[in-house]
Length: 253
Image 1 (tube, rainbow, N blue to C red):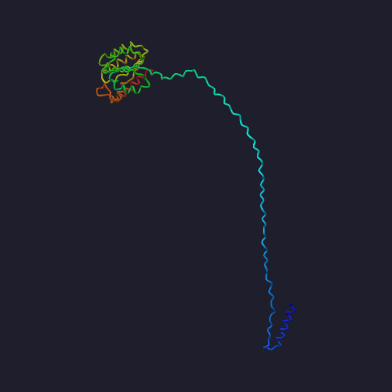
Image 2 (cartoon, one colour; image 1 turned 30 degrees about the vertical axis):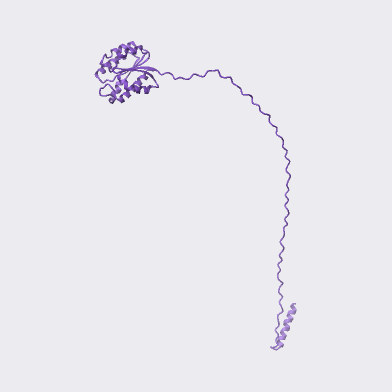
């Protein structure tokens, strides 16, 4: 094919040289052969054949139901009947009686008595004896006949103006030594009381069963407890007198 093309070219050239210009023949180039079109072959899509899904269902395992045995009915034993207790219930507890005592006094006890009872109600069972103007001789027979073994003799102010300490000496000699006696030393608001206190202090020193509470010293330390007559007490003085009587009441066991 190449040789043909070359020969054609040579012949064309010879014709050109020999032919006049008006008879010039234009040699046409041989047709170019176009390359064959590229054919793209598209492979058909692969078809995936879906296999049918086969579900294998296993038959259920046979269940065998074993009948349960019924438990035999439980028989409870009859309740035991205990015989009634024949023991008697314990007796109710009773509080022990409070210690008893007796207080003998004069008008100074009247305003202090309610307070005294309030502060000693749970500790002492007190029998109170007093009246205005009383002195020891007014109570002497009652004191000797009193069966209580605890005595508080809150007297002396009126004794100082009358018979003095002599009746006290006679009474203390007459009382048995088993009596526990307390004497609150009288407040010395006068010279007569000072003499009485000195005499009675000598007398009680001979009796070991007689105890003395120095009420005189307590009042002298608090003159505001005493009224202007130097015999009777203010409200605060009476409260303090009640507290002193409680101390006297608890002196004897």
